[in-house]
Length: 203
Image 1 (cartoon, rainbow, N blue to C red):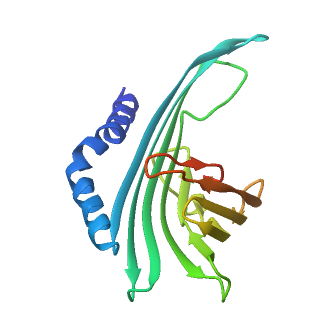
Image 2: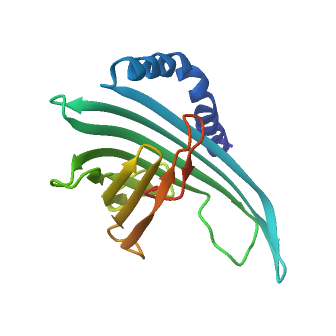
């Protein structure tokens, strides 16, 4: 009963956070447009997957996912673009399949720092480096063994404001796939519409 109460409290926090922070974020976006020096952004999501059964085994699995990320960007020395981030993730698993053992929950907590630099003297070409020290656990505790430092390295080419092409790699120490390629593009035909075919999310 206590664990269910804690889990519902955490989920409620993820859901209500956008409402509580909306005034602050609105002011931050205005500041971003006015000065183009610093900004604050927040992104939160909740996804529910109804219970599903297995044909040959009795029982079902039900999953709910939630995540929250806050980003703060600024210009270091008025030249170097830097972005700091805080990211939390929660996956709740309700499993009634007796023959399959699954954790009741998966929790992640990470901080990140990212910077983008001009790539030598190539026009409209940049190099982006990001590091995200993270904890991954299946309980409410984060032992030292749950600590990882994922990172990513991207080469970015932006021929015009509408098109951005990306190529690089993401590194996940002590994961099954320790290195994954990143390849894609972002197309922004106007200020309200964006097609992101290269979204990078370290998990």
